Image (cartoon, rainbow, N blue to C red):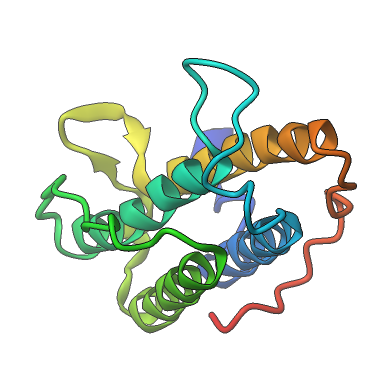
Length: 163
């Protein structure tokens, strides 16, 4: 007898990519809404980070996570993003990450997409990237509201980014 967990997943790989691209497009619009002078300076209070810093974390995680998912070789050394200190540079890095996603995705197998991060067997890498981004974007929505700026509608996730 086939068990429910043996059935194909909720998403195909292409549907998962479209889902992720939709979230990335919404997060990019959230970055765009931030006042330039607040993106890397505003925080509601310690120990909270700025939205720019949270987005840099999101960008830094893409390459090692995709590499580990594709090859099974996990290196948690994250890219140096210390030179990114303004919105234009962050958006450029965001778009570069989207390009990396687009070029890597066709090389990911079903097994790789379902794989776990070896030191964290409870963690599936790609769903975690999406979850982490959503979590930080939600923080950004609150920051925007505290700054008196309306965030983009959370349900408008059409994928308009380059990936």
